[in-house]
Length: 92
Length: 376
Image (cartoon, rainbow over all chains, first blue to last red):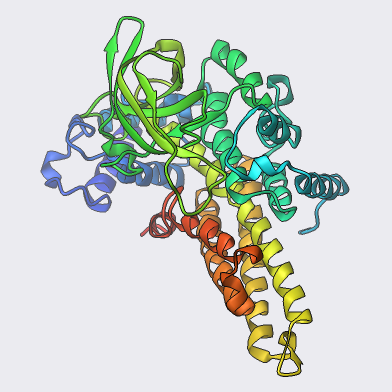
């Protein structure tokens, strides 16, 4: 995984959250390091929809052990989580 | 694609249905004493979906559902089966899947044998069953948490020895705002209320549970702090599929009675069965039962296969619960005036079916879940 790949993945996630999740938050406020949980972006319904998107669009199922606030704090940390789970050495 | 049950499943179904007929009358009266617990455990209902090494029967979702369907088909009280299923799917499963190893080792054998009964303390007077808006708070303290709040409609609340409950630990945590706990009934600061007066599912006692600076040690946290939503959703996948097999058995039983009544009862010299509206109604009842059954078995098969069952579980819950209500009302139409006589038990079937479209997430919520799975 190169930095470019990571940037592409992050960009895709940014676009999905801004355009598809109906967060009610102005798109410019949803940035890579915006605190999604504190902003109320990731409530129960939108988290479930984001998880479904990660599963269908990126082929990654997030196991329970990784379902923590730490991993879902920002789009940066979510990107890192997807990359971690995609890696062949990921511990599931 | 083979839709038939295996010989082992057929045999277990028949054995359970027969044994359910012999349940003591106390089991229908909302009495959850040692005798009733022993009977339920003897049928495997309290630990069906728990590995044998933990004291359970080692069954998967489909076989657990079949067990409950068979017990209901055999005539076991719907409320009593609801009580056992709430214990198993909403409480024991979360302990199995999310408790620490030492806690699992301590609790699971007792939960499977009925030595401990569990209550599902999720719903709140203000928040309903919306886990993202829980008023109950868990405050961090040395070695654990202090719980404060009130839970309502706690299934098995008045008789449980252990409660699986959920509280907000991080109000700004969004999806990760809540944490799940397994709390002993005799914990200081926990008060279980009296049974509510319900009109249906009377075999399951329900009531309030109040927490007032109730200490819960860290080892009784289920999952990690902030994973309450995850624990609850996992338990709901089991409850919305396996528990609702009770309503398959109920419909099977109700339709059987209606067929018998339509064949035997004569009106104006004709059998009811020969009246097209009656026969048509019974055909519709059978269609609803079998449609729901296919969906419920599919949902269970998805769980057993380790695939994402969310769509199938929501479809099954919606179909089976709505079918249960409509079919119970249809039975009332077929039995006519007799449906209002207590001895026929039709009114009881209606009262037991009505809550099915509400608990475990209403029909409207299931439609929302289905829409979400469609990508809407």
